[in-house]
Image (cartoon, rainbow, N blue to C red; front, side, top):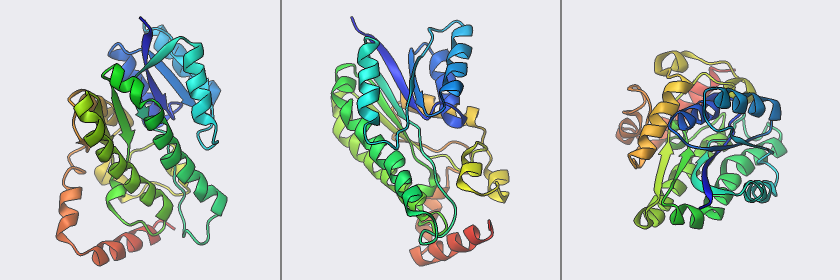
Length: 259
């Protein structure tokens, strides 16, 4: 029988690294991919030192069009196939869309949308055969228009919609499909995006480790959506009470204060 693994993208830091620790602690063999091979190797060594089988390390940049091919080839070379897919990799940039570098913003689409879609569809048959699951990392930002981070917010709206649709298609075939929608989480995301955590992070703060635990429990329980932390849970419902124009203006004002 071919060994089954959980593939986690963006596993070199933040929520991705914590998800790797949680899955490993629960007995899953892992395959980890990210750009920073030194971080991946250190995490793989840490997991192995705790008594789990050492994860397969797959260095790669999901922004590149052939990233999915390389991941698939690496898994085949390792003689493993997917049981769970965790599409965690993603990033955003702060600033007005018309003023930011266009290539950088298209890179957000490549990672947050194209790569996530590619891997989800590429391995769907395997996940059906193994009755596994997909965990896609969205964001509470996906419920909002995001002036100041327009492409990032829009990409997460796609993740939520796509994941729910996949759940409708794959759920009847025995595949768990869950979208994780955290609020602000203290990770390297903010520094890469170009802003410092604000009062929203202080109020809604949930650690990456707690987010990962909630995500794992939600996926195993086959929840449609995981909203980690008490402060985030009411947000999607509260947004229904306000006109979209009001929400747009409020988000724009909030984002302007980050400058």
